[in-house]
Length: 84
Image 1: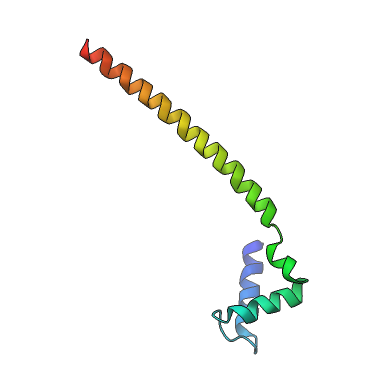
Image 2 (image 1 turned 120 degrees about the vertical axis):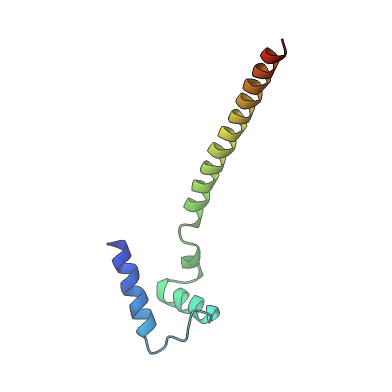
């Protein structure tokens, strides 16, 4: 369903008479602001996405830290047992 909406919107945009290409960034930003309610609309959902990535980073770094400590301990005990 979402993919269909994206394709439909892309086709509408590409066949629009006012379409001048995707490189006209300032005009596109202006059109988005005008159509969707101002500059705030450009940042809609940004706080939620930031919290999502902060949570992801916390989990990723903690797992990395614990796995590094465990693997260091595991391989140091394994090499100590070989040396004895």
